[in-house]
Image (cartoon, rainbow, N blue to C red; front, side):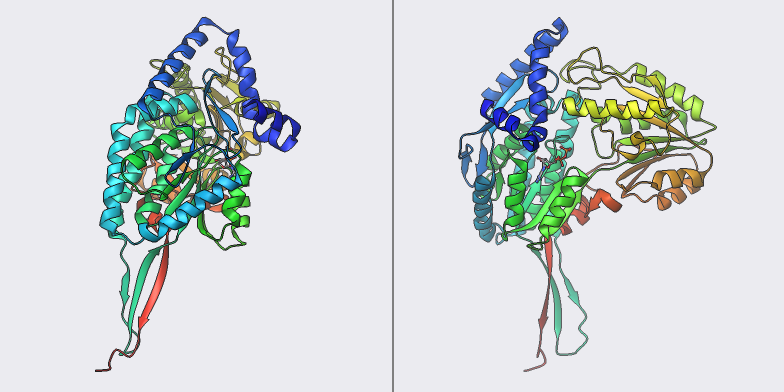
Amino acid sequence: MISHMNMALRSPMLLSRYSHLLSAKLQIQMHLSTSPLTRKMSTDARSIASQLSNSGLLKTQGLIGEKWSDAYDGKTIQVINPATGDSIADVACMGGRETNDAISSAYDAFRSWSKITAAERSKYLRKWYDLLMAHKEELAQLITLEQGKPLKESLGEVSYGAGFIEFASEEAKRIYGDIIPAPLSDRRLFVLKQPVGVVGAITPWNFPLAMITRKVGPALACGCTAVIKPSEITPLTALAAAELAIQAGIPAGVLNVVMGNAPDIGDAFLASPQVRKITFTGSTAVGKKLMAGSAETVKKVSLELGGNAPCIVFDDADLDIAVKGTLAAKFRNSGQTCICANRIIVQEGIYEKFANALLDAVQNMKVGDGFSDGVVQGPLINEAAVKKVESLIHDATSKGAKVIIGGKRHSLGLTFYEPTIVSDVHNDMRISREEAFGPVAPLLRFKTEEDAIRIANDTNAGLGSYVFTNSIQRSWRVAEALEYGLVGVNEAGISTEVAPFGGFKQSGLGREGSKYGMDEYLEIKYVCLGNMNKE
Ligand code: ADP
């Protein structure tokens, strides 16, 4: 770690890349002088980490073929518990060389994995799903430890994430082709669906398990092999999931994991003609780079990028449903999801009532370490995330927005931020244009349905959106008019493995989950049999 930090300090680019580690170091220093409550949280987290270590699921090396491997130059990177600033583990900090070896392993394994029957692949995936669910508690603890979300949410993520593997195991057997009526009597026309090849999967830190399973589940079901690059901030859950894949008997090389220097790993994926598909979830800026970089070898690309979700509350909404839905859409994972409500657009007739009811609900939210009882909001992922929220609030209040509650760091210190509501927000403020990725609910006011749709669509993003109304006609009209890949009507919990997830506009390309998500890992091959009338 020290050598890594020194390296970062020498290079401004690396400094910004690894700023979360530097701030984590500061957090550790802060932590030593913080309250007894903070120290108690730390002790709990430490004993959980040592139990996990005994369970064999706390892996720190990458997986290349059948071998768990250190970085070839021995470099490591610290994984930090965002709730305490403590280091959980040092994991291998890999780069291009390890990635090339992982790609070769995946390429070799593709030959046999793509040839076994769909039923066999289905059985492996089912076994993996069973193991993920059997280790639900430990995986959830790992998620809370490295990512910070409340344990209850982590347990939910394990079920949700494992669901993609279960769904893929079922869908593996339903990858049908077609027979096309031939235009000439001596021809027979077929369409085959075949796996695209080696997949490079790059995932973020906000759902350390689910963002991986929703990619590799369908990839493996279709007969592809994969190299996963989890976020360097949360690699431990990915490594535990890979260990369970091995225990499920998934053959060596089918699934590989490398983590560490993200640009080096990404460049190795892009440069390799053997990688036929890039699937990425993360920032729009990195997604654009990967899309541009894929052009050289013309890879298939799917991107799940940033959102700017509107949550529209009409005068005719059920207040209770709208408040509960908004709370879930906004504050889940401390606001750190790409479908978190980013702008709460409320009709003028219900605005005051809604704001007061939301305030009542937010006042009762318990903030703390994700392992503590009753906590519904954990820390943000790092200091940079807190600073981003602070600067958005500062911009909004300097332009006339008002903080109704919160608006500052939490007394717990470290990376904890108070659940916040800001009123009188306009669509031209930064808080409405950028993804806050924090526990901040900005309230915007509108008059007519047309206003609401115009404000909602006035962004380059188009991922999640929410509408609260009791009118069936309005809900249909507005759902059709929203330029978004997902619309929740009177519902915030819309993400599931059985439905397609993905964005319009600059929120991405392609879909994950459901039967549509399978197509992302398949090539379509047309076969024409000729001279079929010959005796
Ligand atoms: P976030 O802001 O959510 O961390 P990022 O886009 O920075 O979003 O990160 C998402 C994933 O992309 C992480 O696994 C990260 O390591 C990876 N990543 C970041 N930069 C690059 C890059 N230049 N090439 C490939 N992957 C990258």
